[in-house]
Length: 502
Image (cartoon, rainbow, N blue to C red; front, side, top):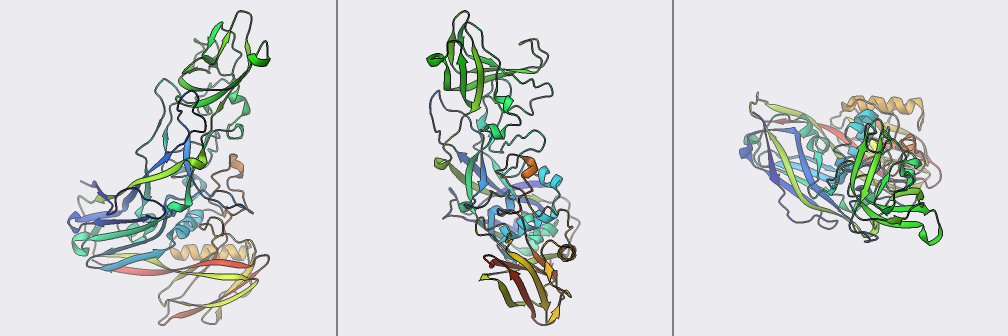
């Protein structure tokens, strides 16, 4: 029977931008393990600092996003992009894989290798979410949200972000059975991109709600303390559209019959219970929400009322809030009934980082390993450093050992461009499933624009071409024509096949 075994990292304590190295040692006594189904857990907390402490401490829909520059959007990112560099080795087999800039590579492969449906299916695991395409909700995995009842929603102190080993190492992807008794102790080393992550708040503004009317409440006419409101919208098909939850801090605004000083302006209260009147037996309106607060926010005498009642989610101080990664562990799947594997065939990547120095007509020749079978050239943007984005590039052409790879220049986003991309992905063993050229924007509140950004940093550009294996090093000449700021940062990934004998 298969078992999952957790092993803590060699390093302890909080991981920070300056203490971002994580090592795991998997002992040979583990026997046969399935590395494809194994993963790393990073326990992530979003520590919130309140902007206003009136009426108590609320629960906020806080999440994590990738830092952006001044001219770009926050990119939606894969969990594996949290790892910048990684390597895996064993005591008896030595170095197995050592990949530099796995964040850029895994983000690129996920962009082209996952359909939109597959991307959305990862939502429950993603460290970073995009807006829901159906009901425009934008929740995160760092909070437990209760939309009805009186149990208070809570911040999660234990929120493991899973990073699959198969997304980091092709050896692990191919290693459904790895006999550690033949490989010796296995050591995995990761360098994290903690400095690229920052806290963010979701579900606060009217723009983030599916409809502006969701914040509107029925008029309040009950004499005495006002401590309950009834939603204007009727949720007859469930609470998928509801932006309210127990423990949420909101700002209440209302117009009193007498107006002036009697009006309610930004009274802050915390929601203590929400009742969904499914059949209309409580409020007389089927589907209405009855929302109760921790204290009264107004008072009415006979003949008076509050109209134009609205609830707006309160914001926290994002700039003072922090992300805490206080634990790292690896979860290894131990195989109970192995069938026996004598060798593992996999692919790894060598990486070369260079710079075009802003040249408009870039020419350079690179030495490529004899066994390299595929070539990927990325252009990491200056803002986020994980998206291959440079729309100043107009065309390119490759020569391999003084032989043209194509009979003409390849202009970006033309049929020949996609032909080479599809050919290379197929040669790498991947299926080209997505041509949106975009993994998504996490700070976009309208789903129709999530994958539609072509100018501000999240649209992908890639030079891809298969290579033939040679007995000696081969030479790849790269010619790129550009405008504007020209060719800037470049990362070259060369795929190299490997076979490990057990």
